[in-house]
Image 1 (tube, helix red, strand yellow):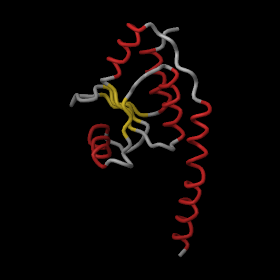
Image 2 (cartoon, rainbow, N blue to C red):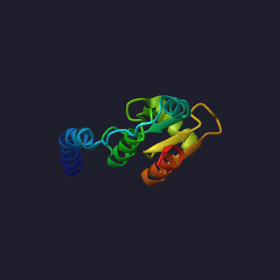
Image 3 (cartoon, rainbow, N blue to C red):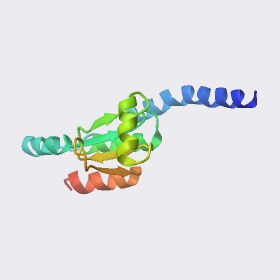
Image 4 (cartoon, helix red, strand yellow):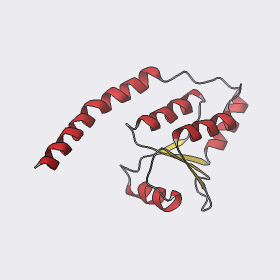
Length: 131
């Protein structure tokens, strides 16, 4: 009985906090940086090789998505909670089901799987920042 009450509490908490977190993300996402059309086209092409495994309401995933928006990066996002194929790919390729995880080499069997939001953000800044 205690387990049922605890599960109910955390599910209810999630139902309440998820919209708040998503609204907060919308309101605090920075404006994207400006690039020339040619430079943005090159960034877009480089992003074709990337995929971010994330959960919609995960605070660490939100942090990465906000940086992606700031850097104007059109990286494909994949949600392992909503798609079992993405969950299988994340566990098989990266070895863990943790998110966020950036797959570098989206369709490459030898892809690099990068976990930890700060590591992902640092890598994105190193690869794509214009300053």
